[in-house]
Length: 360
Image 1 (cartoon, rainbow, N blue to C red):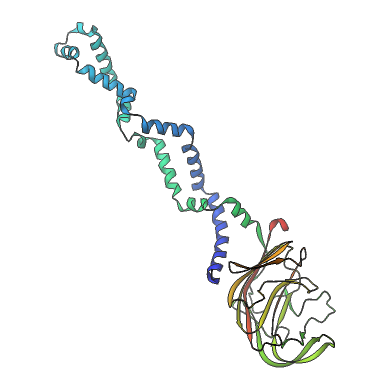
Image 2 (cartoon, rainbow, N blue to C red; image 1 turned 30 degrees about the horizontal axis):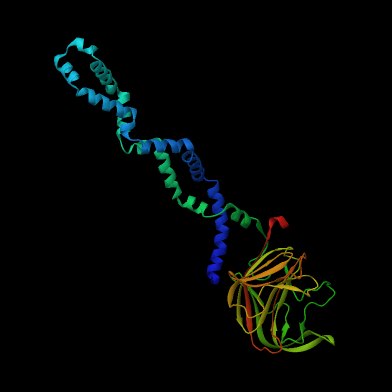
């Protein structure tokens, strides 16, 4: 999945939860559930079977009409109807005929007879209307949507809550961020570079925030700046390039969670986007060790045991968590190793961190 499609998918997941809960409470789903219970009931199905499979000839009305027609054309009844002899009313066939004649003329009988004689009688019943309504509801877009998703999957998505978000609004970084390396003590100099790298860090001068995007630029610039030397300690050192490094002033990531960042990379410089603790000796890297994609959404999923990296929707790495159980700061930096010369840009549209509500 490309970055645009994956970002759209992420947005759809949030919208999916909202819509699922709306449908869950809707009148149309309540109607569907009520009708489903009615239609699937044993009594309903038994009545449908009776009305759709019973032959007219086997009904009481059918048998009555058959006997009536049989008697009507019998010789005894024909003679009675022609001669109108009262005494003949005592004859068994005539007496039965007269009784049936009164019965079949009754409005109640005619209505029942007409119903059973109709081969499509089921479709004239209120129950059929309920069944048809249920079938219509089954095709309704809200009902189709609702049953395309499992309640446990929605609950799993809902279990994750946003604990930190950076959308880079405004013209500069907020006080959540400060320049320099992350060290356990404020007494240690944080704003410095390393002599083993080609860039000096400029305490924010190479950082721009505009159009809701943070951009760290690695540019060609002769500059003398503090740098750590493995044997000499902190010295002033000449550099041919400049860039920036930032970290969050407080821990922003919980002991387990999900971090996602939309990142664009241009040029040759290398970049770090990672979670780390205050000793900064171990990190959970969000950008892959090899060259990242030019434009992608990077996801880091971590828990007490392991760390999993994704680029868009593809898993690219899985490893043991070296910082299990620790609260974590976020670090951003761009740099040039000794063997790499060139400029570059790290652009970040947004960073979001989630955790399961049970972890709060």
